[in-house]
Image 1 (cartoon, rainbow, N blue to C red):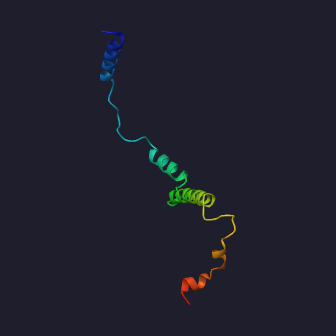
Image 2 (image 1 turned 90 degrees about the vertical axis):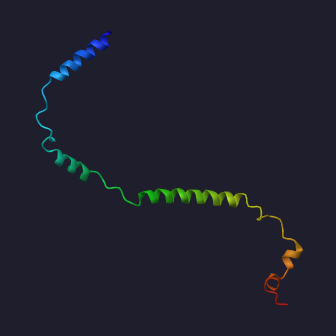
Image 3 (image 1 turned 120 degrees about the horizontal axis):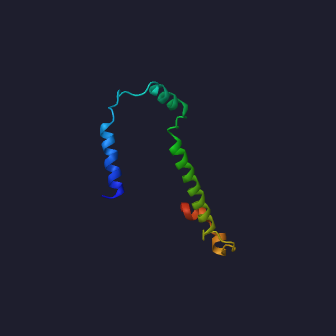
Length: 97
């Protein structure tokens, strides 16, 4: 046997000879300590998760909106064509002719 096995055998033999525990009940004052600790910690708000998700959603929406504004091809700095500038769009849309 190696030294660990001998030590283990001695330890288990001593554990078998140890007297049984006198009481299986909880120590005095345990319930008071548990309740005091429970009331000392702040209660998490039920909507805290939604607040974090809303903030992340807002940041994603701002990022996507900024990217859409930067990469938008419909906005151009060139002058509009003559046909577009002089077209009567109201008559075209409503067909009032």
